[in-house]
Image (cartoon, rainbow, N blue to C red; front, top):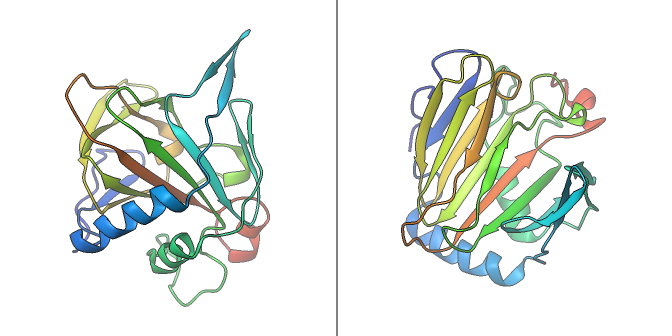
Amino acid sequence: MAAGPNLLPRDGEAVLHETWVPPSEADDLMKALIGAVDWQQEHARFGAKTVPLPRLTAWYGDVGYRYSGVVHPPRPWLDLLADLRGRLPPPGGVSASSPGWRPNSVLVNFYRDGRDSMGWHSDDEAVLGSLPTIWSISLGATRLFLFRHRQTAERVGVDLGHGSLLVMAGDCQRCWQHALPKTSQPVGPRLNLTFRLTGAARADAGVR
Protein backbone atom coordinates (compact mmCIF):
# COMPACT_ATOMS: atom_id res chain seq x y z
CA MET A 1 0.00 0.00 0.00
CA ALA A 2 1.24 3.50 -0.82
CA ALA A 3 2.43 5.74 1.98
CA GLY A 4 -0.01 8.25 3.41
CA PRO A 5 0.57 12.00 3.86
CA ASN A 6 2.84 13.49 6.49
CA LEU A 7 0.98 13.30 9.81
CA LEU A 8 2.89 16.21 11.32
CA PRO A 9 1.84 19.78 10.49
CA ARG A 10 5.42 21.09 10.80
CA ASP A 11 8.94 20.33 11.97
CA GLY A 12 9.51 16.80 10.79
CA GLU A 13 7.97 13.85 9.03
CA ALA A 14 5.82 10.94 10.20
CA VAL A 15 4.46 8.89 7.31
CA LEU A 16 2.21 5.87 7.77
CA HIS A 17 2.07 2.83 5.49
CA GLU A 18 -1.15 1.27 6.80
CA THR A 19 -0.82 -2.31 5.50
CA TRP A 20 2.90 -2.54 4.88
CA VAL A 21 2.85 -6.19 6.00
CA PRO A 22 -0.11 -8.04 4.42
CA PRO A 23 -2.64 -9.29 7.01
CA SER A 24 -2.01 -13.03 6.62
CA GLU A 25 1.76 -12.54 6.78
CA ALA A 26 1.38 -10.22 9.76
CA ASP A 27 -0.56 -12.90 11.66
CA ASP A 28 2.16 -15.50 11.09
CA LEU A 29 4.93 -13.01 11.80
CA MET A 30 3.49 -11.96 15.15
CA LYS A 31 3.00 -15.54 16.29
CA ALA A 32 6.53 -16.49 15.25
CA LEU A 33 8.16 -13.48 16.91
CA ILE A 34 6.35 -13.96 20.23
CA GLY A 35 7.83 -17.44 20.35
CA ALA A 36 11.30 -16.67 19.00
CA VAL A 37 12.27 -13.39 20.70
CA ASP A 38 14.27 -13.53 23.95
CA TRP A 39 11.93 -11.28 25.96
CA GLN A 40 13.26 -9.39 28.96
CA GLN A 41 11.59 -7.48 31.79
CA GLU A 42 13.80 -4.41 31.93
CA HIS A 43 14.04 -1.92 34.78
CA ALA A 44 14.78 1.78 34.32
CA ARG A 45 16.04 4.37 36.77
CA PHE A 46 13.99 7.53 37.24
CA GLY A 47 15.70 9.73 39.81
CA ALA A 48 16.27 7.63 42.91
CA LYS A 49 13.74 4.97 41.91
CA THR A 50 14.20 1.88 39.77
CA VAL A 51 10.97 0.63 38.25
CA PRO A 52 10.00 -2.18 35.85
CA LEU A 53 9.15 -0.98 32.36
CA PRO A 54 5.47 -1.55 31.49
CA ARG A 55 6.27 -3.86 28.56
CA LEU A 56 8.68 -6.63 27.60
CA THR A 57 11.65 -5.77 25.38
CA ALA A 58 14.49 -7.25 23.36
CA TRP A 59 17.33 -5.69 21.35
CA TYR A 60 18.82 -7.24 18.22
CA GLY A 61 21.49 -5.97 15.87
CA ASP A 62 25.12 -5.26 15.22
CA VAL A 63 25.59 -2.83 18.13
CA GLY A 64 24.27 -2.33 21.66
CA TYR A 65 22.12 0.52 22.92
CA ARG A 66 21.52 2.44 26.16
CA TYR A 67 18.57 4.62 27.27
CA SER A 68 17.01 5.57 30.63
CA GLY A 69 19.80 3.68 32.35
CA VAL A 70 18.91 0.46 30.52
CA VAL A 71 21.78 -1.23 28.68
CA HIS A 72 20.88 -3.48 25.75
CA PRO A 73 23.74 -5.71 24.60
CA PRO A 74 23.39 -6.76 20.95
CA ARG A 75 21.83 -10.12 20.15
CA PRO A 76 22.41 -11.72 16.72
CA TRP A 77 19.75 -10.95 14.15
CA LEU A 78 16.83 -13.36 13.97
CA ASP A 79 16.07 -14.32 10.37
CA LEU A 80 12.56 -12.85 10.68
CA LEU A 81 13.95 -9.48 11.80
CA ALA A 82 16.71 -9.46 9.19
CA ASP A 83 14.13 -10.11 6.46
CA LEU A 84 12.01 -7.15 7.59
CA ARG A 85 15.08 -4.92 7.71
CA GLY A 86 15.86 -5.82 4.10
CA ARG A 87 12.41 -4.67 2.99
CA LEU A 88 12.38 -1.24 4.66
CA PRO A 89 12.19 1.86 2.44
CA PRO A 90 15.30 4.11 2.41
CA PRO A 91 15.36 7.48 4.22
CA GLY A 92 14.41 10.56 2.23
CA GLY A 93 17.20 11.73 -0.02
CA VAL A 94 18.96 8.36 0.04
CA SER A 95 18.82 6.02 -2.96
CA ALA A 96 17.70 2.45 -2.34
CA SER A 97 20.85 1.35 -4.19
CA SER A 98 23.17 3.29 -1.85
CA PRO A 99 25.16 0.91 0.36
CA GLY A 100 25.00 0.95 4.13
CA TRP A 101 21.83 2.96 4.81
CA ARG A 102 19.83 0.12 6.29
CA PRO A 103 19.33 0.11 10.08
CA ASN A 104 21.83 -1.89 12.11
CA SER A 105 19.60 -2.59 15.11
CA VAL A 106 16.01 -3.04 16.24
CA LEU A 107 14.20 -2.67 19.56
CA VAL A 108 11.29 -5.08 19.88
CA ASN A 109 8.54 -4.20 22.38
CA PHE A 110 5.79 -6.55 23.58
CA TYR A 111 2.69 -4.76 24.91
CA ARG A 112 0.74 -7.56 26.56
CA ASP A 113 -2.49 -5.61 27.08
CA GLY A 114 -3.77 -2.05 27.56
CA ARG A 115 -1.87 -1.66 30.83
CA ASP A 116 1.44 -1.82 29.00
CA SER A 117 2.59 1.51 27.57
CA MET A 118 5.41 3.84 26.52
CA GLY A 119 5.77 7.29 28.10
CA TRP A 120 6.64 10.55 26.38
CA HIS A 121 10.12 10.51 24.85
CA SER A 122 12.10 11.19 21.69
CA ASP A 123 14.55 8.87 19.98
CA ASP A 124 17.19 11.59 20.00
CA GLU A 125 20.27 9.96 21.51
CA ALA A 126 23.54 11.23 20.08
CA VAL A 127 24.38 7.83 18.54
CA LEU A 128 21.34 8.20 16.26
CA GLY A 129 22.64 11.41 14.65
CA SER A 130 21.00 14.80 14.28
CA LEU A 131 18.21 13.77 11.90
CA PRO A 132 17.53 10.09 12.56
CA THR A 133 15.08 7.92 10.68
CA ILE A 134 13.08 5.49 12.80
CA TRP A 135 11.13 2.70 11.10
CA SER A 136 8.33 1.46 13.39
CA ILE A 137 6.38 -1.72 12.52
CA SER A 138 3.25 -2.61 14.50
CA LEU A 139 1.72 -6.07 14.79
CA GLY A 140 -1.38 -7.12 16.70
CA ALA A 141 -3.90 -4.92 18.48
CA THR A 142 -4.47 -1.40 17.17
CA ARG A 143 -3.22 1.20 19.66
CA LEU A 144 -3.32 4.99 19.73
CA PHE A 145 0.09 6.60 19.14
CA LEU A 146 0.57 10.25 20.11
CA PHE A 147 2.95 13.02 19.07
CA ARG A 148 3.47 16.15 21.19
CA HIS A 149 5.38 19.19 19.93
CA ARG A 150 8.17 20.16 22.31
CA GLN A 151 7.52 23.92 22.10
CA THR A 152 3.81 24.34 21.40
CA ALA A 153 2.50 21.15 23.11
CA GLU A 154 0.34 20.58 20.01
CA ARG A 155 -0.73 16.94 19.78
CA VAL A 156 -1.28 14.60 16.84
CA GLY A 157 -2.76 11.12 17.25
CA VAL A 158 -2.77 8.14 14.92
CA ASP A 159 -4.04 4.57 15.28
CA LEU A 160 -1.29 2.08 14.48
CA GLY A 161 -2.83 -1.12 13.18
CA HIS A 162 -1.74 -4.67 12.43
CA GLY A 163 1.01 -4.70 9.80
CA SER A 164 1.50 -0.93 9.64
CA LEU A 165 4.82 0.85 9.17
CA LEU A 166 5.35 4.35 10.57
CA VAL A 167 8.47 6.14 9.30
CA MET A 168 9.63 9.08 11.42
CA ALA A 169 12.30 11.27 9.86
CA GLY A 170 13.74 14.77 9.46
CA ASP A 171 13.24 17.00 12.51
CA CYS A 172 10.64 14.66 14.04
CA GLN A 173 12.79 13.49 16.98
CA ARG A 174 14.22 16.95 17.62
CA CYS A 175 10.88 18.78 17.66
CA TRP A 176 8.35 16.16 18.75
CA GLN A 177 7.98 13.60 21.51
CA HIS A 178 5.84 10.50 21.12
CA ALA A 179 4.06 8.05 23.41
CA LEU A 180 1.85 4.97 23.48
CA PRO A 181 -0.59 5.67 26.37
CA LYS A 182 -2.28 3.09 28.56
CA THR A 183 -5.89 2.31 27.79
CA SER A 184 -8.73 0.96 29.93
CA GLN A 185 -10.35 -0.54 26.84
CA PRO A 186 -9.95 -4.30 26.36
CA VAL A 187 -7.18 -4.75 23.81
CA GLY A 188 -5.10 -7.74 22.81
CA PRO A 189 -1.31 -8.04 22.63
CA ARG A 190 0.77 -5.84 20.37
CA LEU A 191 4.34 -6.02 19.09
CA ASN A 192 6.30 -2.97 17.98
CA LEU A 193 9.61 -3.18 16.12
CA THR A 194 11.61 0.05 15.86
CA PHE A 195 14.54 -0.18 13.47
CA ARG A 196 17.34 2.40 13.62
CA LEU A 197 20.84 3.15 12.36
CA THR A 198 23.22 3.93 15.19
CA GLY A 199 26.85 4.85 15.76
CA ALA A 200 29.65 4.95 13.21
CA ALA A 201 27.57 3.15 10.62
CA ARG A 202 25.69 6.40 10.01
CA ALA A 203 28.77 8.15 8.63
CA ASP A 204 29.63 5.14 6.47
CA ALA A 205 26.16 5.29 4.92
CA GLY A 206 26.26 9.04 4.30
CA VAL A 207 23.22 9.54 6.53
CA ARG A 208 23.19 12.67 8.73
